[in-house]
Amino acid sequence: MGKIAFVFSGQGDQFPGMGKDMYEKYPAAQKIFEQCDKIRPGTSAQCFHGTEEELKETRNTQPCLFAMELAAASVLIEKGIAPDAVAGFSLGEVVAATVCGAFDNETGFRLVCKRGELMQREAEKFDTSMAAVVKLAPEQLQKVCDQYSDVYPVNFNCPGQITVSGLSSQMADFFADVKAAGGRAIPLKVKGAFHSPFMKAAAAAFAEELEKAEVKDRYIMLYSNLTAEVYTDDVTGLLSKQIRSPVQWEKIIHNMIADGVDTFIEIGPGKTLTNMIRKISTDVKAISITEYLAEG
Image (cartoon, rainbow, N blue to C red; front, top):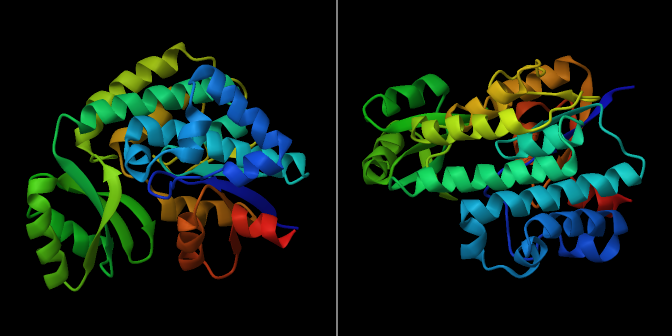
């Protein structure tokens, strides 16, 4: 029998009201939201009633997504659905690290709150943005990026889809060059140039926070955004460096499949990772938690 993986989504899928139905239906979810509210008052209210603009702010997005995703994972685990492996996209990796046992719930949540603050602080220093580029191979996109001093390929999502980060002032021309090369660029609902050199200071500051945190033994395989491999003992290095480094998502999924995973459950408010995984491999099952719970 194949293995089950929980994959935790990153910024971009958040929406006002996320997690509310789960909170009202499942005591396991209520418990997680209440834990988060004790540490950061108003987190659940922000998830359930915050505006779209409010939830775009990284210092809000990251704690809210963490709370919603950890609550959702708790619901599945209480139902007897336990993962054999976990991975998370960007901030989702902090949730994954918590679910696999590296951090307790409180430590994981405090870390993600700090991560959001640090990344927002760096994002506010520069006028930067992100976009998804489709229909170009990595080497084609790299050639376009090489024409710009401050535009970087940062997330290798799935075949034909790569995210870039860069200075907003260079994006209009960059979009035109992408189109001329046969691709298309789609702006993302993210304020900042994450996973790029613009986040170098945030990564260094987050490493200091991680050094102070208690890291426990992991009891589930956790895959790294930085290396696409199963985590080594260098939790601080892997989790901090990913803030300023590309996310190797496509490679992670291939490696998880090679290690026996054949069912991926996306834990998050949307279906972004589910759709990516379906493009990476047609030989595995990928399903969002909303779909999974609706099935039964």
